[in-house]
Structure formats: C-alpha cells, structure tokens
Image 1 (cartoon, rainbow, N blue to C red):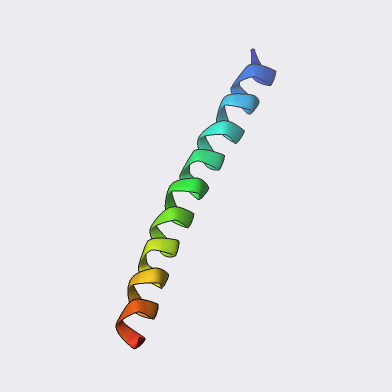
Image 2: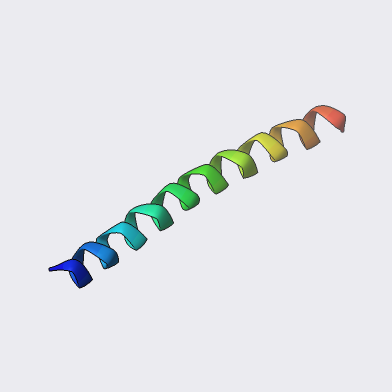
Length: 36
C-alpha cells in the first residue's frame, strides 16, 4: 500500500511539473512575441 501511494505521489508531482512547465512555456512565447 505504501509503495502504490509513493507511485501515486510521484505521478501527481510529475503532472504538476508538466502543468507549470506548459504555463511557463506559454508565458515565454508570449514575451518573445511581444519583443518581436
């Protein structure tokens, strides 16, 4: 049970990192387009 909880926690953290990464990439493209 503890092992499956660890896997769930890792997957949850990975999804959060992916979401924040996409948001940062979107902001970066927005800023670069403004600079151009």
